[in-house]
Length: 607
Image 1: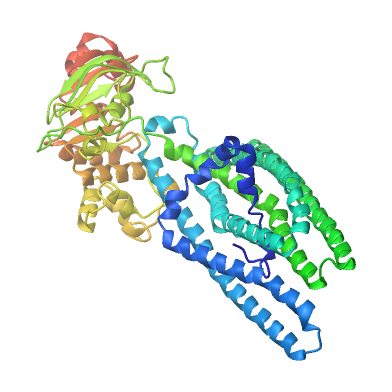
Image 2: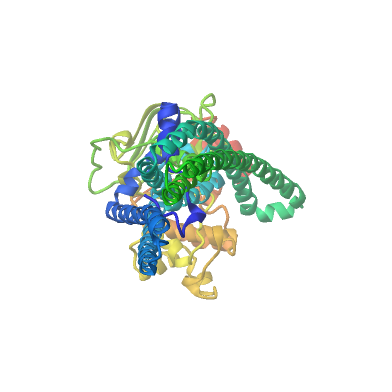
C-alpha cells in the first residue's frame, strides 16, 4: 500500500506489473526474471522486509482515509456547526501524522534493505569471480567486471531501495483506491476501469523497449570502463609513446557510444512518461466532467464527488508514475541479468564431489603422462603435445626453451588452472583431476615472471603467501629474499604503502617481494617462473643464494634463462613447440649439439 501525500516525488504505478504479466505473459515475466533471482537476498532479511511492508500498508490506509474525511467535511461540516469542522480537521491532522511516521519508517527500512542486499550481492559476485577458472579471464575484460560490480549493483540498489518499494506501494494504493471508487460511485468507476487497458498496454510495450535500450547502455558503459582501466593501468607506456591523444580519442568515442545508448534509453522513458501522464489525467478530466453532470442533476452530492475525485487522483497518480518506475525496474532487470550471468558461470575447473585426499606428509612429486593441452581461447593451436616427465620428491628440474614453447603452460597445469585435453597430471601419485584444487595449491608456492603486487603495505604483500603469518616470519622471509635492506629504507619500512601494482618499486624490488612471499608460503613444491629475471647482478647473487637455501629439501621446477639458475638444477627439460625434445644435465645437453646447445650459446655465451 502506498502513501500518496507527502511522498509524491517517488510515487510509482504499482498496477503496471501485474497488468503486464496478465497481458503479455511469459515474455514480460522473462524480462523481469533476473529480479526474481534477487529474492534469496531479500528473504535473508525477511523481518526487515515485513516491517517495511507493514509500514507501507499503514501509510496506505492513512492515505485512503483522507478522502472520507474530506467528503464528510464537505457534506456535513458546512452545516453551521463549527465544532464539526474542527473535529474533521483534527482527524485529518492525526491521519497525516500517521502517514508521515509510517512513510518515514518505510523509507528507512526499504533504503537500508536495498543497501544491505547490494552489499551482499557485491560480495557474492566478487567472491564468485575469484573462484572462476583462469579460462574465464582469458576472454573477460577486467574493466567490464568492475563495471558490473559497481555501476550495475548501484542500479539494483536504486531499484531495491526505492523503485520496488514505490511499485508495491502504488500497487496497493491503486487497488485500494479502485475499490473505494467502486464503493463511492459504481457508475463513475465503470468509466475509469474501462480506460485502464488503454493506459496499461502502451506502458507495457514501451517498457520492453526501455529494458532493451537500458541493457545496451549498460554494456556500452562497461566497454568504456574496460578500456579506461587498461589505459590507466599502462599509463607510463601510454605517455612514453606519446599516445595520450589517441587513447583519449578512443575513450571519448567509447563514452559517446555509451551516451548515445543512454540517450536512446532516456528518450524511450520520456516518451513513455508523456504517454502515461496524458492518458491517465485525460481520463481523470473525463470522469470529473461526468461527475459534475451528476452533481448538477442531483444524482450524487458534492462531497461524494470530491471523495471519488480524490480516490481517482490517487489511482491516476499511481498509474501516471508507472512509466518512471517501470523504466527503473527495467534498468535494474538489465543490471541484474548481467550480474547473474557471472553468478551462473561455473568454473571450468572444480573440485570433484568426493575429492581424493593428498598424501601426508606432502612430498611435492610431479608427473606428466602423455599430456596434450590447448588453451580454450586457442583450441586449434595445442600448447603441449604428448608431454611426459617425472619429477621426484626433492629434485630440482629446469625447464628451458624458446618463447612460446609451453614452459609456463606446464606450471598452469600443475596448479590446475586448466585441465589437460588428454593425458594425466599427478601430484604425489594422485591424479590432480581427482583432488581438490585448493588443497593442491596450498602445497605449491609460485614466483611468476610478472610479480603480482597489490596496493597495500609491503608487509601485507609478503603475508599474501600466508595470511596468518606473524610479523617475525614475514621479516625473516624478506631477509632470505634479499628484500629486507631496501624495505627498511622505505619511509615506513614494512608498513609503507607501495601503490597499485607496486608502481613505486623497481622491477627487481617487486620480484624480491614475490620471492619473499613464496618463501613464507613454505610449500613442498616450488615453481619459479624466471624468478630472477628482473634482478640486477648484485641482487641476483643474493636471491640465488636465498633460493638455494629455499630449494633444499623441497621439489623445485624452474623456468629459467639464466645459466646460474640452470646449473644448480639436477636435470633440464628442453621444450620446443610444446614437446620435450631433450632431457639431461647441462654438460650432456651442451655436448649433444641440439636445441639446448644452441640456446646455451645464444643466451649464456657458452658452448
